[in-house]
Image 1 (cartoon, rainbow, N blue to C red):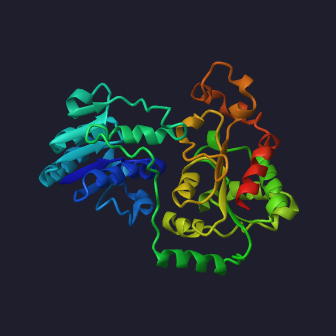
Image 2: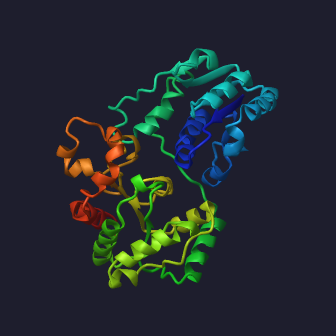
Image 3: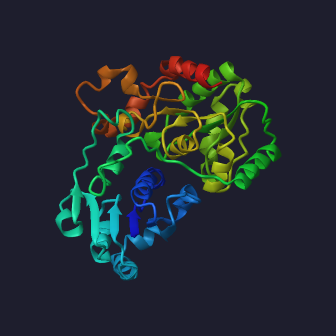
Length: 354
């Protein structure tokens, strides 16, 4: 059996949708599963036992209809028995239709009748998915092919022993003491409205150092060095001595090698936090005031994985509005998200994991 899974982007979505591949391998153990993703996300799915082949595309190509048509011709020759479109946008729907796969599964949308043979309503059962509704949405796509859905599946990242050794060597060369706690910090979100104000983040780090004495690595890329330094400079002198500000991994895969050796990862909710969970590392996630926490607080158990949201502390700010409706007020709401609000939860996280 030949299967195509489509989850073009983003990084977090590509990682999350690997649970579909896991379910497919359980249902069809001998199937060959191809996974169509954006090229730079391959670092998240390398060596995954449920994925046999990667089809990597670029953003500029995938958004061109001429490329979609050209790619569909290649896919049609593969004669897929099953296709699952977890991306669910116009271009992936067209690609699904033109692939001529025998069975095509996607979410119910205006184009569903044309693109898919099976359209699934994206409405996960919240009694099953009390956390991480985004996982439930993915698993729903497997319901047309099996009555034995493994609802407990979680995304996983696989590193080889050699890669883990490389991460350890990098840390040693960077001056990290592996006998002491080491915390990765997601200091910057994917956008300004997903980033805790720098002064608040500095207060979180000051409090964390006082409790743990941990060493800190900042997760950022060279183009974000100015912002990372601003957070560093907002920290106390004591905390600054614990931060290895110039030590950053040059690629996503290198970041994962390093992250696998960390005691935990804390900071802005996003891709890095999800990578930590997939490596089974404790996480403390600070959600943006406009993001729906229930969608992405995967695996939250109040111990190994804890997440905080402004709505948890000041529900009166939201009244009857959902966080998503507050996007235009994100920066204003962030000013209400004082670091001290989360200190009790941070102390609990430290007690459980340090």
